[in-house]
Image (cartoon, rainbow over all chains, first blue to last red; front, top):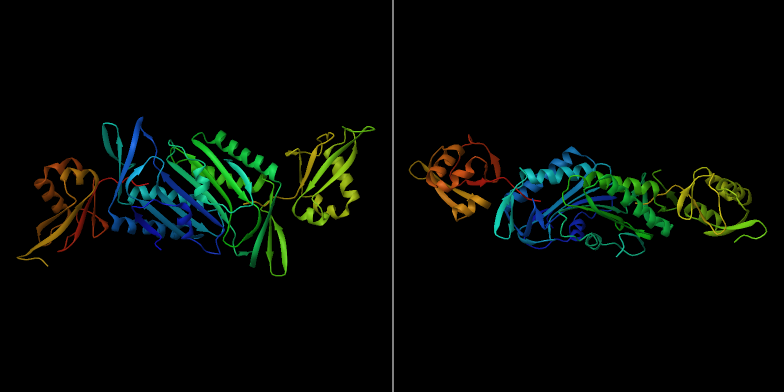
Length: 138
Length: 138
Length: 87
Length: 87
């Protein structure tokens, strides 16, 4: 069971958080990125995600390492990112963090998704009627 | 489908976030409270949650209203809290927030669980070998 | 409706005070116009097991948090709420 | 292993530059000791379709981000990475 995974299959949040099962945890936070029907005023038809999968999984693991180095109360991190064609409403990414107590899980969660958008070699193409574009927050 | 619910049934995160399904959202954050096997150095056997259910659901809805008044980008809030006897590792509460963009969802998520622990009439009894205690963060 | 100038309220108990009381709900007859504070004083006088909890509770009247000065009305549901512990 | 003092590296393309190239992977022969920067210059000279992307990319060598000055070795996998957009 991988904690850091790039997959072409649909993602279940319940399945992802089950990867962190641990009788000593009391709090989990998750970020779930889903496909939105609009972007900069355009009606999005679907998204196409592409990864450099071997490096992407290593970069996801690096984010987990960074988080656990910075926030000592974070017990475990798992990140699953889907690639391929995703329809409106489908889940593109699930990040989950576990801890005994909740206090640091919120900042760590925000860090995880911000960092994912900085360093993980995954790309997103928005496709709308009559056009398409590769998008980045960078 | 209730957005603010006290239930005796086990909670699925996938089912809860499905309550927020909306083609205009791009980000969901969730807080998941689970039953931990220890508390203040004692080995916990199980927890017993009790609610004033009618008031608790109204208080959960109030938290949702407070969040949407304070963070205008939060589109919807759902909170499902389980009551009754819960075993180690089981989910006691799921809070989920949706938004078009992620920026404000982290602070709002932290607020939701902090506020739940302040105002929602739900009580938790820890049961360990040879004793038990009603617990509060207040 | 009250009778003879009195009114009847329902009081609900939860968690430790519920266990101490051995029941989750009682009815209490009070003089018309009585306040939450007067009800609490009557309850602790009548049920000494409640005394250890009385300093830490909040009260809700008809599911809304209320202060000691709030006036009660016939048929109100009053909840005796120890410190909450959800999540 | 290189031959005649040359070395062979694999270059992988993704997203827009992959589409512009019409392929996700090429091999390139370079003089032994060539750097990432020299590879990039050779690629943009050889494939003008890459020029519009060259100012915005990062490069990974064997799956680790690397600078223009990094020295390449025979058999390295070099990735031409446009701005990422996961999440």
